Image: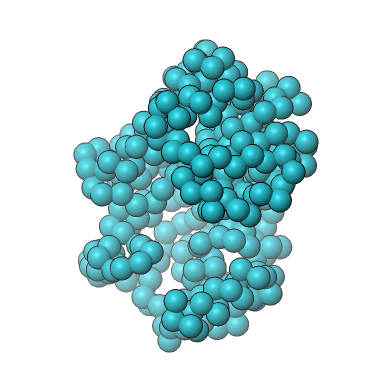
Length: 318
């Protein structure tokens, strides 16, 4: 491996945790910045991971984090933002300005390798602010490909034991008598988080991946309804699912935007789901995509600690 010291931005999250574990298995040193060190405490037992409490949105802090690094992997992403044109301020900060600053920091620090996570369906003319802002970040990274060895990845929805996707639908069906589902015919191609991590880590040292943009999707296409039904069956609590017409889905999303606590749905999320998150290309580097049915049944059945914890929290009203 030509790159020994890796700055992993977004490393404390769902995908980042799996990427960090793969990097550690290779004996690489991994620096993971986090606004709150507590959020990355699960990474502390990994022997070659350094968790640094830092705000990567601050240019000076970001430059300091890049000192001594050989490569940067940027997994930072958010699902919600205040609205704006062409996208809101939070989307601008994380999806557009941060990649631009990462490219600048790589130039200034002489870092030769940059991997960047975007999203399937990202485009400048996409219907949602999320996808438009992701496209802007892609453009910033790919514009530097003549100076820095960059690679962009565009995943569909990502599943795995700690996901907030299938687990969320399973938990809802444990406690609700039925589900009102927006965009029931939206098409998705879920990809296993372990495969995503393998693709990123494999790309790190590959010359043929430099300057490339890869779609990352699983082996099967599902409608959103099919995935919600699957989660219900596998968790043992299948519920009736009623697909909402566009107008009712809009009202549901609008109401959820004003609910306290974690935001489950926004109007911009609805606009993102208007774009099919699918790809006809296989995973790169000869990696075989793992089917949903191989991984999901175990954790949706409640046998994993995370799902048991979520169930107990729900019963406690928290």
